[in-house]
Image (cartoon, rainbow, N blue to C red):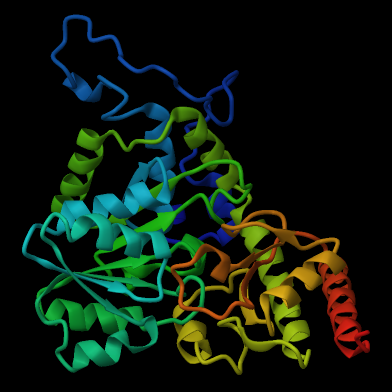
Length: 390
């Protein structure tokens, strides 16, 4: 990619289409196919001589092209992982040692908290938690001054609270802590934590970045060479590198990220208003609604909106009736795909949410169709609630 591309002279659509592009060669594909080799020919050279690949657990041309694309978007050096949790594990284990303290969001991704409670404590790491909305306040109070690594997820999953990355990064660095930001919900087009002062970006690319609900992938991006080496060492030795075909699929899908995010955000904006206008729905959250508690920071910090909305229905049964009356809402966990999905979080446990709390991931359906469908389903839900019971 040219220096102009790296400096963001071009728009998001151009950047994702061209990210990690190979040099054009007449008669060759515009996008290289996946390289499936595990070992590579060494001939008479020493391992790694001249930058040659040696073994796929350490490096792979397909993975490297994808990492180049991610690095260009994140503004750092990137490492791809077999899943978002593999990427998060590498950050935790690569940066925190026994006896050191890790601060994680109490309202962040549940499996990350489960990893900390089940395994990190077992290896002698001290774990502290804090809600996303008050992490800045607690850092100013000096509550976590001994933390080696501070992890934030903004917008948080699933409640969609945000924190000011630039301020949290400054506070973290003043006390000698590293700051890692889970950027899964925002994506590299929606937010650039490294440019805001974060040391590490981690994301589950299974979600919006790959965006087709057909693969597992994650990545970590950093600027510092020592951090890069520490996290790569963890990946090399644990074997958490992704497979070449999944990586190739993710890189191919990256080219439509701008288009997908635009439609998903359009649908989220419309759906948030529909839900907020229904008397049976409470606590509708979308950081780009002007009335949302997250709006003041999100509108200043984020580069563009995303497609995830959360809301609370009166009960689990009400959510079930809504789903039965809808044709376009699909019950599924995860988010960021082409289909609009609804996830009732309480059914999985772990998140301190009401039984009727839902995370809705808006897909790429026509906005008018999605609004009509959900509006009809909400009316059916209201009519059923008003019907006299025998």
